[in-house]
Length: 256
Image (cartoon, rainbow, N blue to C red; front, side, top):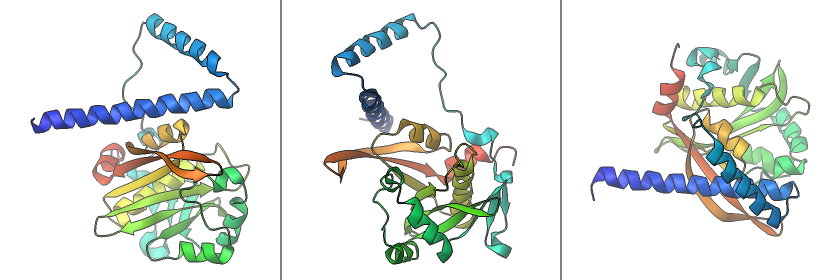
C-alpha cells in the first residue's frame, strides 16, 4: 500500500470519528431537551427527508476568523511591557490577586467541570498550579478589568507544544468577543513569541459549539477519547483538537 493510500485511509478514519462525534453530540442534545428515544427515530426520518429534498449542497470548508483577526490585529508590547493587546482585550502575566477571582469563578459547577482535569479548588493549591514550571498563565483584561485567564499547560519545549486552557469567568460579559480575542492573543504569544509549533486543547464531553469555534481558529480534530473520564456517576468523552503554527500563519498572515 502506497503512502497516498495510507493518508487517504487515515483521513477517512478521522472523518468517520468526527461523524460519530457529531451523531453522539446531536443525540445528547435531543435527550437534554426532553426528546424521547422513540421520538429520536422520528427526528432521524425527518433529517433524511430534508437531505433528499435539499437541492443545494452545504458550503464546504470552514469560515475562519481571518475576517476579524490578522497578525496586524495584535499590539505586541511584550518586549517592553510584558503584555499583548487585541482591541479592548489585554493579556498580562497572571497576578496573585487574580487567582482569588478565579476561585470565585470556579464555584460555578458548569465552569469548574468544563476543564480536563478540573482546577484545584483551594486558593493555595491553585496558586501553586499556575506557577508550576510546566505552565504559563495570563490574566485576561477587558477595558483594564480582570475578567478571565488563559494559558498553557504541559509545556514541552523540546517538542515545541503546549495545551491551552481558557476561562472568561466574569458574569455579564458574554457575547462581547472577549474569549475569541484572548484566544487569538495567546496563540500569537505561543507561535510568535515562544516560537512553538503546536497548541492543542481538550474539551470535556461533546460540545459542538466549542468544536466549531475552535475550528475557526484553524484547530482540527486530533482524536476522541470515549468514556475517558468520570464525572459523578457518569463517564464522559474527551475531544482533542490541535493547531500547528504553519497552518495558523497561513490563515492569519493575510493582509498583515
